View (spheres, rainbow, N blue to C red):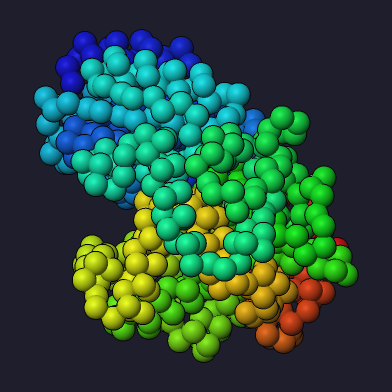
Length: 543
Ligand code: NG1
Ligand code: ZN
């Protein structure tokens, strides 16, 4: 990249206010007005990464479940995965570099990463429905063009759709056709094939109300509707025609507040689910006949999918390795159920999908879900080949049928990243095949009551953790205090960690009753406030 290119590149954005954002768990994320400068630097990172990998790189503009006035930008690696850790650091360096340092930072990265600047660069771009996203996408296109790269703009797509497109383009469309239609066709075909044997379809069991968080999920589900069989009845709610994005609705709201989206009408026992703002998370829920709210979060989803896959493997007579990857936020009951009842190995990873994804790759079949509903299943290449071979060649009818179902399940899953649409279809298919109601699914095990809180501190980085974030190392007295508090409650567990996406420390507690979980979470919040430099008012007790 010669001096002229860099000069033209700087001209494009030097007038914009500079901000000091770092590439975190969710890429760069902040108030939208802080992203305008950063987007240019992201364009530069994308071009360099594309030249280095000789592959298409994705750039998604979204702030997911965060408020509408926020925005963010995230890079997608060639196989649809999160950006490699070394490049997260390069991205931060390039985002923070002063104009007069840029050339030397670029040269340094090119040297370290062996980037041949003569190679072509190709970037695919996608954005969510935030008002600021369109302008950011335009800036990104200007940037890629000035840097001599080529691009394709997918416009409004869900985050997982752009991950899928990136993977398709880099696998010669082995993974699927790199268009939105290709995505709809692949998923709907797999869904129709998989549910062929389900008897419950005829009883109207595949009837679902969907809160789309007033986001992109609504647009895409409406487009996709004509690809589905008539037996799948979807009522799309919170479609963006009235409310604001993620405001009092969406998967994050439902999970954190443990209540339905405000204004969503729910009949007793009606099956409902919520997407988040960019449709990469999903949680299910219902109100029972007594009006009590039941949440089926990422843990319950992992168990439904894990048990289904395990049953198929047994029927197929296959002995592939399989595990479920969770985080510290997984409900203790879910971990117990996986280990004791389903006899599935469980691993704990740090918060953030890249950690879970990485761990899940160690197995032939790796099911991973964050409790907040972000997750998917990964299949090793060898496992996939074995299963596809058995579906074709197996002589035993029962075994072949199971292998065919497994094959369709693989095609229904978006292996690149958690995908609300794909997860929803898989869950609906499994419920139909098992002839399960949402109540029966919920009854597989009972969650321990739990509570999540946030505490503001002067500098959240003073909290350092170990053991996959389950224990605090600094400040030194904090873990001791958490242990003392936890001892006072039955079946209790609590931990704290600095958020990777917000300026806050997150507190999690679970215990035998909701009152006890609330009390413990409040006490631990106070400990954080006093021992880790809390700012503002003391945390309030929770109702
Ligand atoms: P932080 O802010 O680091 O807790 C949140 C979620 C993560 C992940 C990221 C990315 C919780 C407790 N944390 O991270 O699981 O989804 O956002 O969006 O849900
Ligand atoms: Zn999201």
